[in-house]
Length: 442
Image (cartoon, rainbow, N blue to C red; front, side):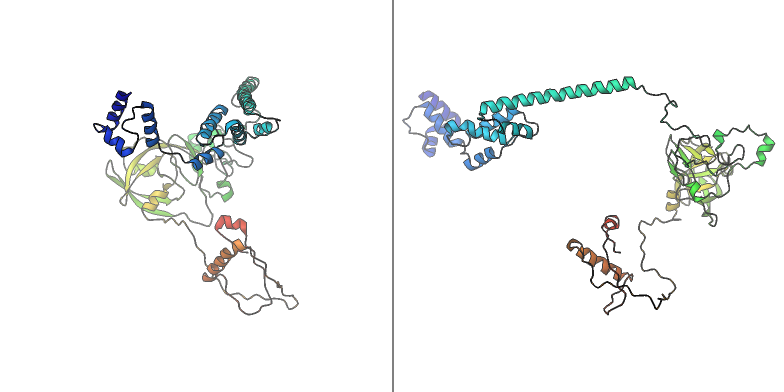
């Protein structure tokens, strides 16, 4: 045993084991008991536990969400050992109480508290059985749900396209599916026959001869109403043109009979061939891409075109995209798409903004309405309306009401009156408008 003691001390303290013993006062130098030395080492190196903390950990211990009954019980057993208190026969009852109170399942907790003369062993057996049955029922519910879904799928086979009664049939005027009174072809002119209220792709009129076709307009030049131009379609709808590869978009224009479109004459430079031409563009803030018609493109000569990976449709039907080319307009480089149909040259929103032709305004502020002074005449027999007592403003809103009144006063929307008046109207803070615009007073 002396040899074992010397080996242990040499390993821990190197070549000075006796000095270590003297400094640490672990044992008497003449003591050769190896077990006593191990006990001294354990007592010296292992820190003392905080009994208050250990007991609070036990008293506050609750079952975690993913913790099983067995794991919860074993952790309680470990915690009660660290409390440094000899509970004796009461240890099982203390663990039982903490076990029942710390359960997350409320039904199980109520069930255990209703059992007379509940012991720790009986509580564990009941909790384990409840946990097992609950997991089995959960697994059975998943199996039943899968079986139910499979039976529904077999009894209700997937209908073929166009055979379902709930599926809307394609419109005979535009070829799309839409709600009632939402046909985009309403008020439009067919590019095939010249008729109205339908598109060329669903036109049932036989093709005209070449001479008759020349007499018919190729594009609807008449202004459309706001209602007919802004009907919802199945696809994505914008004002003029949208640019997204491999998708078909509907092209529509909001027009007004009394307004003139914004137009500008710009010089286009084809960067690949270094050819120039002048083109009359219509500035359209709703367009995502720049487009020119075939006539404008021919004025550039037989310039090289790139593949235009985009599909466009208009009120008269699909637009023929010839391709695109990179151009420079007043120092701004952009892509321009060439359309085979007879359409207007459109300058997109981004290009117009880059050329500083338009400016984006994110916020519009209005002060007091400035207009011609008017005089309000009140009949002599009218009784003035006045409230005798002002309505109370809720305490949480008083600071907001005061701030809003000061703001309206600074903007000359209202003015302060210090003298009595015959006409006094109540003021009400509107909570719904507060959520929409910050705050509002009526």
